[in-house]
Length: 233
Image (cartoon, rainbow, N blue to C red):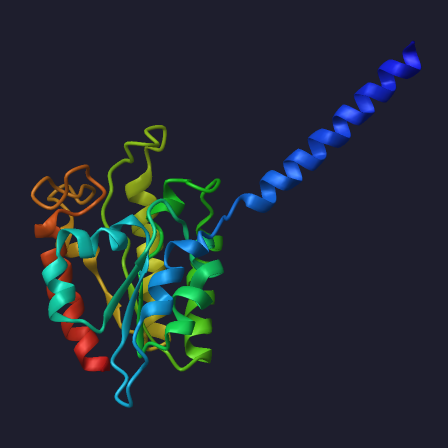
């Protein structure tokens, strides 16, 4: 009787392992499929390559939705943001969503969801390392880089237990800016232009939830990023 029970428990464990493995194989951490079709449909690069890829999270993903005219006026601009993603996921899909598109310039906006701990505890060193990794991949493929600051965020509606977001964001921004200067990489400071008088908050005139920009917020970002893009092109 005991042998039968132990055998059944062993078989149950084996089945659970197979089920977990199958589930893991179906889970796509980087979400490569999000832009797979759009990437394949992009026109071929002409001799004068002026393609620009915006790499980021939901802030980048929402840009063409809230300000479609900006992308219509600049048809060479390609948005490759995915909501909820962290820099760890950016690194994984950087080849598919940036390198393979053969852009002249890539704009990297990373850090918001890292601080929000969307894929695990926040570690500034690892997040910064992911940004450096993307820069190195871009440079190895002769793609010019623009680094940008993390936008202000006093808190996250989906992670209210995080109460020190402003301090973490400021520290990461300072590190990104320092790295950009040391390596002669253009750095665009969205943070200073968007932050409220308290030095911590993304105000209501620019955001509907304190994290994601409204059209007015994107207009501020466009005014900052556009001259830098044109200079590189």
